[in-house]
Amino acid sequence: MLGLTPASAWVPAGTLRAGLDGALADFRDSRYRRLSGTLPRLIAAGHTVAADGGDSREPNALLAGIYTLATRMLIKLDDQQLGWMAADRARVLASGGGDALAVGEAARNLAVLARKAGWHEQASSIALSAAGSPLLSGSSPRLAAERGLLIQSAAYTAARAGDRDGMRELTCEAASIAACLGDRVLLRDHGGGFTPATVELHRVSAENYAGDPGVAVAAALRIVPAGLPTTERRARYWTDTARAYANWGRRDDCVNALLAAEREAPEETHARPAVRDLLSGLLVTGRTGPELRGLAARCGIN
Image (cartoon, rainbow, N blue to C red; front, side, top):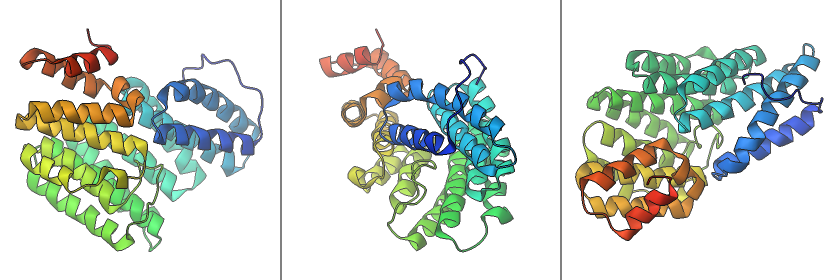
């Protein structure tokens, strides 16, 4: 992204597509160590293909997909500066490519970054404006799923802003869209997929941040983790549940949920700053057993 990777030799668009598909699979399965080597090469190769692509939309669409994935990874690692850079490049490329789903996903990532910066009004506006855009109108299930993801994002923003009623209203709206689409997984590579179960997963974190961890835990207990569409989402289930247990004062349940997250996706659990922050708090606020200390050490906390 900063132009420090050696220029890539030209590769066919089909090879670049295969590389992106592989990188998306690594993200879904939380193989971040491998992804950290793949993504820089994909970005360099994508720029080479786009520069050679003339007026073709395909290279730009592929590069937009690569930057969208990079944005998701940077959000997970809480790297705001590079996250904004990747998100803006994804937005520009997606807009030029004319792919409504890519435009919607770029907007969703921008909304997430705005929320992380504490700009709740702007984050909500970005997400809801994109959801209501004519680009995403129509009866296509995939378009409906992208609208649902954006509304879901706005619900989470409402929770972070302390608007519990707004959060619940928007979450119910997203849940209604998901219910109409059935149990099939749509847009697996957009925010971890869209299903009734993934909406409920967002409800766990949203209720917790809105100030009701007991309701968050109740929502978590209604979810069957194995029914979530990716390893990354299943790990997110356990870490969100752990955070709710921590806020509810259920320390042992919190530690057990974190250990379940590690069993599901060790690289996800070890890499996320949010998990390390939670563990650091546990270490200084109460009894520490060997399981907690061991997990903290594996996450790089001494």
